[in-house]
View 1 (cartoon, one colour):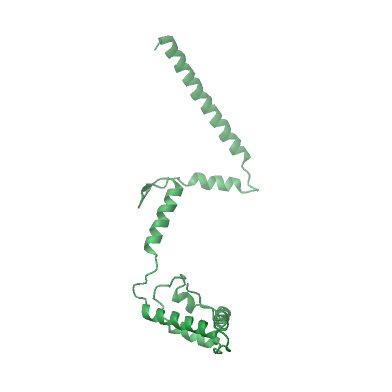
View 2: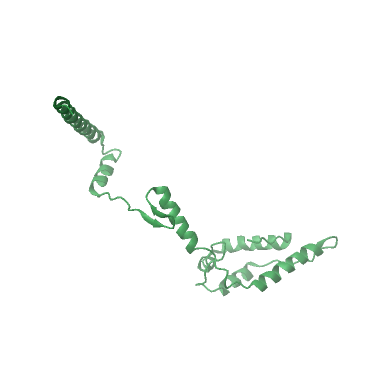
Length: 176
Protein backbone atom coordinates (compact mmCIF):
# COMPACT_ATOMS: atom_id res chain seq x y z
CA UNK A 1 0.00 0.00 0.00
CA UNK A 2 1.19 3.48 -0.84
CA UNK A 3 2.50 5.33 2.28
CA UNK A 4 0.45 8.42 1.39
CA UNK A 5 -2.73 6.34 1.14
CA UNK A 6 -1.91 4.57 4.39
CA UNK A 7 -1.40 7.88 6.18
CA UNK A 8 -4.69 9.21 4.77
CA UNK A 9 -6.53 6.00 5.81
CA UNK A 10 -5.13 6.25 9.35
CA UNK A 11 -6.11 9.92 9.57
CA UNK A 12 -9.65 9.10 8.39
CA UNK A 13 -9.88 6.24 10.91
CA UNK A 14 -8.88 8.61 13.74
CA UNK A 15 -11.39 11.20 12.48
CA UNK A 16 -14.20 8.60 12.40
CA UNK A 17 -13.27 7.33 15.88
CA UNK A 18 -13.34 10.89 17.25
CA UNK A 19 -16.68 11.60 15.55
CA UNK A 20 -18.17 8.44 17.08
CA UNK A 21 -16.90 9.47 20.54
CA UNK A 22 -18.37 12.97 20.15
CA UNK A 23 -21.70 11.53 19.00
CA UNK A 24 -21.82 9.09 21.95
CA UNK A 25 -21.04 11.88 24.42
CA UNK A 26 -23.71 14.16 22.94
CA UNK A 27 -26.25 11.35 22.99
CA UNK A 28 -25.41 10.53 26.62
CA UNK A 29 -25.66 14.20 27.66
CA UNK A 30 -29.04 14.50 25.90
CA UNK A 31 -30.24 11.37 27.71
CA UNK A 32 -29.10 12.73 31.10
CA UNK A 33 -30.75 16.10 30.45
CA UNK A 34 -34.03 14.39 29.55
CA UNK A 35 -34.21 12.56 32.91
CA UNK A 36 -36.84 13.91 35.29
CA UNK A 37 -37.94 13.19 38.84
CA UNK A 38 -41.60 13.68 37.96
CA UNK A 39 -41.86 10.67 35.64
CA UNK A 40 -39.36 8.53 37.63
CA UNK A 41 -37.03 8.27 34.64
CA UNK A 42 -34.13 9.48 36.82
CA UNK A 43 -34.68 6.65 39.31
CA UNK A 44 -35.04 4.05 36.58
CA UNK A 45 -31.74 5.18 35.03
CA UNK A 46 -30.04 5.12 38.44
CA UNK A 47 -31.27 1.56 38.97
CA UNK A 48 -30.03 0.49 35.54
CA UNK A 49 -26.60 2.04 36.18
CA UNK A 50 -26.28 0.49 39.67
CA UNK A 51 -26.77 -3.06 38.48
CA UNK A 52 -24.09 -4.69 36.42
CA UNK A 53 -25.52 -6.29 33.30
CA UNK A 54 -24.25 -9.76 32.55
CA UNK A 55 -25.35 -11.70 29.49
CA UNK A 56 -27.01 -15.06 29.96
CA UNK A 57 -24.63 -17.75 28.76
CA UNK A 58 -25.68 -20.27 26.12
CA UNK A 59 -27.71 -23.25 27.29
CA UNK A 60 -26.90 -26.87 26.53
CA UNK A 61 -30.05 -28.31 24.98
CA UNK A 62 -30.96 -31.51 23.17
CA UNK A 63 -30.20 -29.78 19.87
CA UNK A 64 -26.79 -28.46 20.99
CA UNK A 65 -25.89 -25.02 22.33
CA UNK A 66 -28.71 -22.47 22.39
CA UNK A 67 -27.49 -18.89 21.94
CA UNK A 68 -30.53 -16.84 20.89
CA UNK A 69 -33.62 -16.27 23.02
CA UNK A 70 -35.72 -18.39 20.66
CA UNK A 71 -33.28 -21.29 20.86
CA UNK A 72 -33.20 -21.03 24.67
CA UNK A 73 -37.00 -21.06 24.81
CA UNK A 74 -37.07 -24.18 22.63
CA UNK A 75 -34.41 -25.84 24.81
CA UNK A 76 -36.44 -25.12 27.97
CA UNK A 77 -39.65 -26.32 26.29
CA UNK A 78 -37.96 -29.57 25.18
CA UNK A 79 -36.62 -30.11 28.69
CA UNK A 80 -39.98 -29.46 30.36
CA UNK A 81 -41.77 -31.69 27.85
CA UNK A 82 -39.32 -34.51 28.56
CA UNK A 83 -39.54 -34.14 32.36
CA UNK A 84 -43.23 -33.33 32.78
CA UNK A 85 -44.90 -35.83 30.50
CA UNK A 86 -47.74 -37.78 32.14
CA UNK A 87 -46.77 -41.06 33.71
CA UNK A 88 -49.26 -43.71 32.69
CA UNK A 89 -47.09 -46.58 33.95
CA UNK A 90 -49.18 -47.03 37.11
CA UNK A 91 -52.55 -46.42 35.44
CA UNK A 92 -55.12 -49.16 35.91
CA UNK A 93 -55.72 -49.94 32.24
CA UNK A 94 -58.34 -52.60 33.01
CA UNK A 95 -60.40 -50.16 35.08
CA UNK A 96 -60.19 -47.48 32.39
CA UNK A 97 -61.27 -50.05 29.79
CA UNK A 98 -64.24 -51.13 31.95
CA UNK A 99 -65.37 -47.53 32.35
CA UNK A 100 -65.15 -46.94 28.58
CA UNK A 101 -67.12 -50.15 27.87
CA UNK A 102 -69.84 -49.19 30.36
CA UNK A 103 -70.12 -45.70 28.92
CA UNK A 104 -70.31 -47.04 25.34
CA UNK A 105 -72.95 -49.59 26.39
CA UNK A 106 -75.02 -46.93 28.15
CA UNK A 107 -74.84 -44.61 25.16
CA UNK A 108 -75.72 -47.41 22.72
CA UNK A 109 -78.60 -48.77 24.83
CA UNK A 110 -80.02 -45.32 25.40
CA UNK A 111 -81.64 -45.44 21.93
CA UNK A 112 -85.48 -45.36 21.97
CA UNK A 113 -86.23 -46.15 25.58
CA UNK A 114 -86.27 -43.70 28.45
CA UNK A 115 -82.73 -43.21 29.73
CA UNK A 116 -81.95 -44.44 33.21
CA UNK A 117 -81.88 -41.54 35.66
CA UNK A 118 -78.50 -41.18 37.33
CA UNK A 119 -78.49 -39.68 40.79
CA UNK A 120 -76.89 -36.22 40.77
CA UNK A 121 -73.79 -35.80 42.88
CA UNK A 122 -73.90 -33.55 45.91
CA UNK A 123 -71.24 -31.01 46.85
CA UNK A 124 -70.62 -32.96 50.03
CA UNK A 125 -70.04 -36.16 48.04
CA UNK A 126 -67.56 -34.36 45.76
CA UNK A 127 -65.83 -32.83 48.80
CA UNK A 128 -65.51 -36.29 50.43
CA UNK A 129 -63.97 -37.78 47.26
CA UNK A 130 -61.50 -34.89 47.08
CA UNK A 131 -60.66 -35.32 50.77
CA UNK A 132 -59.97 -39.04 50.18
CA UNK A 133 -57.29 -38.34 47.55
CA UNK A 134 -53.64 -38.52 48.57
CA UNK A 135 -52.08 -35.04 48.58
CA UNK A 136 -48.60 -36.03 47.37
CA UNK A 137 -49.63 -37.91 44.23
CA UNK A 138 -48.64 -36.58 40.82
CA UNK A 139 -51.26 -34.62 38.88
CA UNK A 140 -53.18 -36.25 36.07
CA UNK A 141 -53.25 -35.15 32.42
CA UNK A 142 -55.15 -31.99 33.40
CA UNK A 143 -52.19 -30.82 35.51
CA UNK A 144 -54.28 -30.16 38.64
CA UNK A 145 -52.58 -31.41 41.78
CA UNK A 146 -54.47 -33.07 44.63
CA UNK A 147 -53.24 -30.34 46.97
CA UNK A 148 -54.86 -27.75 44.73
CA UNK A 149 -58.10 -29.75 44.71
CA UNK A 150 -58.07 -29.99 48.50
CA UNK A 151 -57.62 -26.20 48.74
CA UNK A 152 -60.67 -25.45 46.58
CA UNK A 153 -63.19 -23.07 48.16
CA UNK A 154 -66.86 -24.04 48.51
CA UNK A 155 -67.86 -22.06 45.40
CA UNK A 156 -65.34 -23.96 43.28
CA UNK A 157 -66.56 -27.29 44.65
CA UNK A 158 -70.13 -26.25 43.85
CA UNK A 159 -69.06 -25.36 40.29
CA UNK A 160 -67.23 -28.71 39.96
CA UNK A 161 -70.35 -30.49 41.23
CA UNK A 162 -72.37 -28.68 38.57
CA UNK A 163 -69.96 -29.88 35.87
CA UNK A 164 -70.13 -33.47 37.16
CA UNK A 165 -73.93 -33.37 37.26
CA UNK A 166 -74.06 -31.94 33.73
CA UNK A 167 -71.85 -34.82 32.56
CA UNK A 168 -74.17 -37.32 34.24
CA UNK A 169 -77.29 -35.64 32.85
CA UNK A 170 -76.01 -35.39 29.25
CA UNK A 171 -74.07 -38.65 29.49
CA UNK A 172 -71.02 -36.97 28.01
CA UNK A 173 -67.79 -38.33 29.47
CA UNK A 174 -64.74 -36.70 27.81
CA UNK A 175 -61.76 -38.93 27.24
CA UNK A 176 -59.32 -36.22 28.37
